[in-house]
Image 1 (cartoon, rainbow, N blue to C red):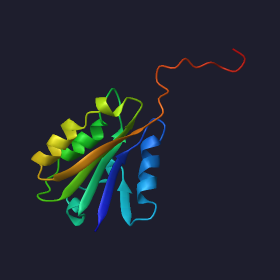
Image 2 (cartoon, helix red, strand yellow):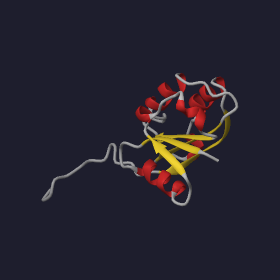
Image 3 (cartoon, helix red, strand yellow):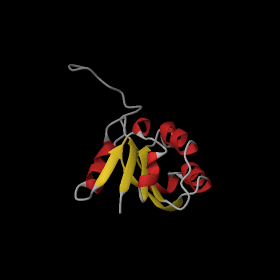
Image 4 (cartoon, rainbow, N blue to C red):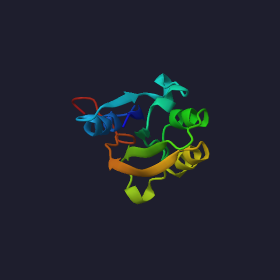
Length: 126
């Protein structure tokens, strides 16, 4: 099975760490959304879409990419990292868009990520 994981990992790199753990022993191609040619996606049997959550949402680059593709019958999954509890994670927008574009969404998951937003930073000596 030929697999592609499309990942946008910006803040702490937590999402990229999850991808590296998933592909450690597998033959998987990993790309950022900007590196993906929507036409060449047809070469893959399974495509994963993942990012950290920003304000409770997946990265907009994933949504933009999904809007520009059509993959009838191809399998996909969605994943994210965040500091919010899994019960509050919403992948619905991307999952619905992928289904509209012809993907079979096989599932989704979230892993705990490190949140440094909102923390007061101090310089040494304070």
